[in-house]
Length: 543
Image 1 (cartoon, rainbow, N blue to C red):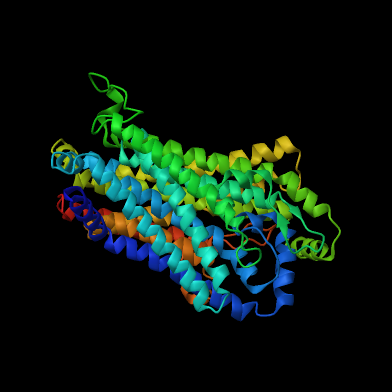
Image 2 (spheres, one colour; image 1 turned 30 degrees about the horizontal axis):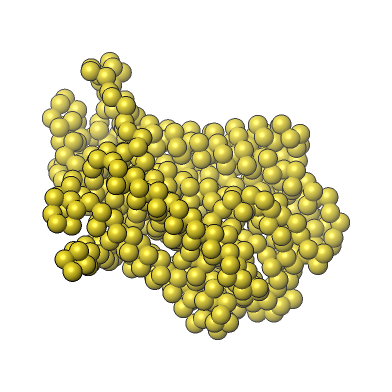
């Protein structure tokens, strides 16, 4: 009975600690489901219009990369195609962040060791975290079910769609718990586990884009890579169109295997230790670490490398899919011919459309990389190490500027590697439908929006330090949802225009409108200037 009581207390503590974060995740997932379903019913109420959209999507791999796997033109199947992959992505990120926050992050903060010294021991908190993660994903599944059901869709299909979302979340809950045992820091664990979620999304996208279309052009059979993705497994349930429950065994199996491996490692390792421990440092610092910028680079190097690898991979994927796009471009069905004619009038090829879509994801990666430079500022300040640094002959302004310069450089580096990857893979494939200049212009077009997420969070850090981390991620998440899914859920253009990603120029021959880019650069410049002025006047502290 004592163990049950301790488990209940620790579970309640986690629920209380995450009450606002969990509410935002669950309500956001449910609201996105409901708004998307309602907007799709209003916009594509006729089956004929849905059929035309599906035929265009199947002829355009870029759409399949970002959306999902078409099955048929029924209302439920169409909604599942458009929104499920993103819902599963959100559930995966929610689960990995939750797993790391209550395991590796607690060990870093020292609270895990204090709890282990009580009768609860080391294992009961892990069980409480597992129950907390399961309950979070059950709530997310119910939110998806409620959103689809409230829109009037078939209840069995809605229930399966919710279950598929929750099952993917549970799979990544297990992955997050395992990665937290492997990595020595919460920052590294969050980076690797969230990277695995994004990788699953990309593998699903590649499988969908390279699949085999049906004769009527309304459905696709997923390619091989989709079967290596938990999100792809969730898609195979065919909610609303086939209602298959057995594919859920795959993500649930991954959750059991990865969670069991995490449990075995937790039983055998010391508190605070990790499988991949940090290497011993030098006895004395290198001369190059004598400046705040060099120190910031040393602290941020690991995460910057991770984001750069993601950008390079994104570019290589964009170029390597050229053969699949060329195959689609060579087909002679009426939809493809009409689509090709429209794109030619705009000076855009199908390959360039794919690259633009992939670079929009690379722009999000670059924005996240720049944002992390500002978040690191707040972490150093809250942890008390910034005060030690500022006790040396380093001004507060110099400290801020060093991180801003590093963040801007990392944004440029991520986009440069993305462009290089796309250019190199296109050249290797012999694809001449897009020239090198267009590839680099597409990368440059993503730069202003990414810099917004460096400058505005920096201003938040100066004016309201305690809101830096939550506010920074909230701004990025809102920008992604409004910019990518705002039109899908039927939001007014004035609301969608609040997202910097909505104003990213799309290079198309000689008619590219760069005015949005100049406005975003101006906004970023003003935000940085105000932040620098304010940083001279505010005090540092851990609160």
